[in-house]
Image 1 (tube, rainbow, N blue to C red):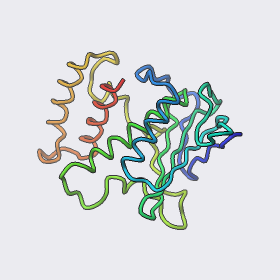
Image 2: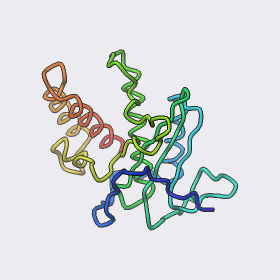
Image 3: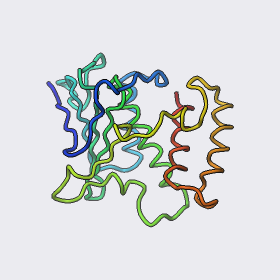
Length: 201
């Protein structure tokens, strides 16, 4: 059965010709989904749904078949938590597994940030919350057309930089962009996420 890609209305798609092949993630499709589900459970979601254009298993309709390679590799995960609805979407990469892996990394980073003893005034997941009665309007697009440079470009290192080089570059960039030092909060978080993605590869 096809689950059907339920892309949020009004959100830009990455044009097929601009999608990139991601060689940093060597995790398979099933493992990427399992990791995503584990993160959602750690966050404490009430329910979740993954939508893709791939054929999903009859016995386990939440999961596409392991060899799924749909023409449209986009992925959207929607979840409910404490009565609120949330969504995140990614279609920046040419393979479904890489887009799902990006969703996993996004939620993992948000969960880690939420656990820090820093008060920001609202949940780290606030930007993924969907408003009542307009659940298609405010999903967060992860790695989509409006996404920023690749992680190695953010850190200004080569795509195959060693973990030591990645850590050193991230340390320098985090110091430069730290909000307490007058840096931009979104850029600071972008650097942190770039470091996580490169070290997770």
